[in-house]
Length: 346
Image (cartoon, rainbow, N blue to C red; front, side, top):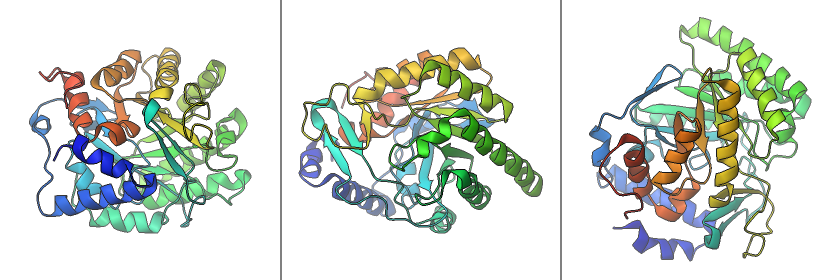
């Protein structure tokens, strides 16, 4: 059944309820063989990034599957890679509901979820149970009640737990929904965190005989000078990738819309231009020394191409899937791999 036919029914529900219903249904359909990878999965569209072979450059961003409960079902949609999380050392409920809001007039979403997840131990068990063997990123964060001066302890604890299971690990310091988290993007705090993670990764690489790449996910609301400083620190501490960007605290283009004044991070079409600017600035600073994953406002194949043209090596989807459905994956792969599929075709 076409997603465009069932979307009105989903949009009639509370956004978080629809989110869980959609994933649960997808998982059930995949289990009985009714969800299968599209034809593009057989096409050679590989990318070598971070020393990892990606079967295609279109991935799923973190946040959709926080606990790694739907890896097999999501893997059947044709993504080149999947990123699960954000996960924290201890389970936490996140912020009170309602905390997820659609803004259809702008093809946007505002969320203030607050790293709601079942804890890293549960995620590890779910990853072990999954049969999908594609490229898996695991996104890690800190618990809401961990002081900033001890944030590195939380990130290191998660790093240790997920290291044996991840293709790469993303350090999330850019969600606006955990109080003070974005302060970790400031040079002094960021250097302390990156140094701790670098040292722990070196030890884990020795222990496991395998060096798992580390990525840093940053906000779109950074000045160019801040982006440059972050780029310098990533190089200094041997990070392998930067993901640009998370959601924005800005409200350009949505203030007059229903729910446009809700607190939280704004994603979707309104963040596209700013996220692309951050990708372009990172590319200028890094000069190819560290690859970039572009995310933010991709709702068509041409948007994915825009991120690549700005300097990204890979892209990730999230909010666009809410409005366009799984066909968006195929459209973006086609746009980036030169296949004969018209952008925007349902």
